[in-house]
Length: 247
Image: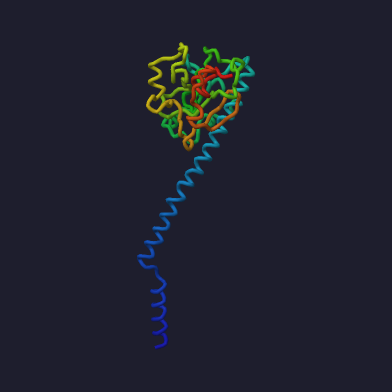
């Protein structure tokens, strides 16, 4: 009899200690709410880490560019504009420690699935594109020709929707006064969205609504489009931080 009563008490104790369906649903709801709150925080933290890694890539590319200019009479590495058989990713490669630097951690474009490792054969496989104002055929092809290199962007995050190339065309984003002979209305339609007043060539929101940049003096910075894009007619600047005519 004692054994039977003891077993009954244990059974009742187990029943009283178990979760009811309502309690389980409440626990699940709490977990779901916490997940909804914390997941964006974790995602933002991960993107901040990628953003920092991307800035580090650009910093190393900037050091490579500076070494290149010292060896080549202050001339910047050439881009594939207007010649298509050369690229800064090839000419600057000897000054870069690893080809992995050419890829932003947040760049998930399909071109990276290629079996060709950049920039050995496929020099268009890069997350970063060069300001075509600095092309070898332009007035600003040399560091000495840029009056304010700390104000002018030379490399940026490339938009993954842009056809694979190693450069972008800020002189096609707007018509200067007097008109810039490099401007093309056809290229303007390809490179700029008048409806949003923003370029199509740069990944403007890749890093938490901002993009990473390398300036001509070698420093790096994360920028928003509204910060980098402006016109200052009195100073002859029409392409914001992308315009080498600044002083």
